[in-house]
Amino acid sequence: MTKKLICFFFLLLALPFFVFPTKVQARIGVGVGTGKIVVDEKLKSGIIYDLPSISVVNTGDEETDYALDITYQQDQPELQALKSWFSFSPSEFHLSPGSMQSVKVTLSLPLKTVPGDYFAYIEAHPVKKDENGSTSVSIAAASKLYFTVLPSSFLQGIYYRVTSFWVKYTPWTNIVAAVAATMVLVSLFKRFFNFNVQVKKKD
Image (tube, rainbow, N blue to C red; front, side, top):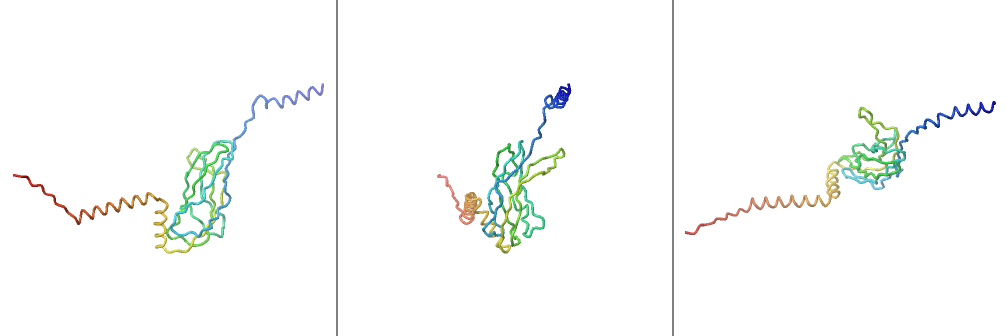
């Protein structure tokens, strides 16, 4: 009789697990494919650089929006690479569980950049917005970025920016320059060479 009571008691305890299915909470996750980026080339002020792309992976089990940001190490000995120097393409993207997105990273150094060694984290994180529209970051994964900037003057920075812009957007810069040169030549031609064509009517 005692055994039957014990079995009946355990059945009562286990009954809710069969009647009411257990709710599993979805897990949000993020990972990056590159742990460290070290730029061996010494960088120059004013130049626009294409850094290695960052691969962002959804390691969770629900669809999530992601974005990249720049963060720093507390009391780091290196100079801080400012957030405004960086741009990401795409800036925000949606990933299903297990999928990956390659993000292009562009570094645009100011015309006058303080020379020295720089460090920053390129951080990938889920984008979660509350009812007020504000974004909260709960978890993140980051790649370490190291680079060095050479000393240069403001005029050198302007020169480097112009040449960098020209090379980066070729052939469009060549097309724009050719169109502008043609317009200038036509304007000069009209200014210095006036042709008066007169038509005389025969009597």
